Length: 190
Ligand SMILES: [Zn+2]
Image (cartoon, rainbow, N blue to C red; front, side, top):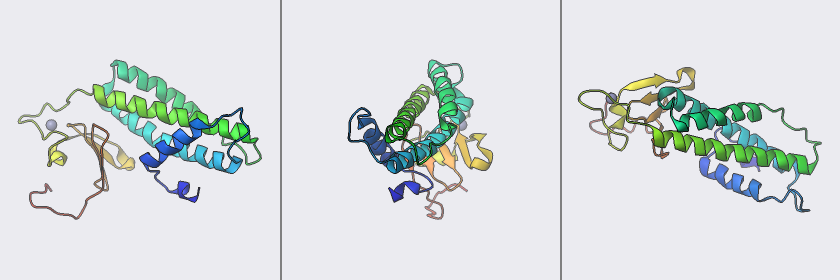
């Protein structure tokens, strides 16, 4: 479980852990150790905060007023509550610890679902002329910035690409592009 202390949890790893947590039978005898359950709960909470921040940003930027946005709003209220629950003590009962991890696992699923729904509902926001490169164009970073995350270090472009300060990107279809600063291909925009 040592790997779970990484600062930014990997989405694939998290989703596998979510599956694992949800497969536990809380009424069965085969419960995980308190330590494992709490460490998973902490991991889900950390990941949940990242997704919730992203969802909030998308919501503010371009989804307000849609059905998906209403869903996002409800999920975010629930996230605010659950992500701010006091962590359980290491002396908690195994069943309580497993239950907490499962609740947070469900929250992670709900947040991912809401984020997916919001990005599907996103209408193209680019109103520039000529139109900016689309999210699947190689020069997508050349699109205009329409929102900034300030100290969180991301920018939302008018083609719905979320660009991070380290040059990593989150595309509207959920694809993650690793940071590539310094690669310097010909034609790279300054
Ligand atoms: Zn544009």
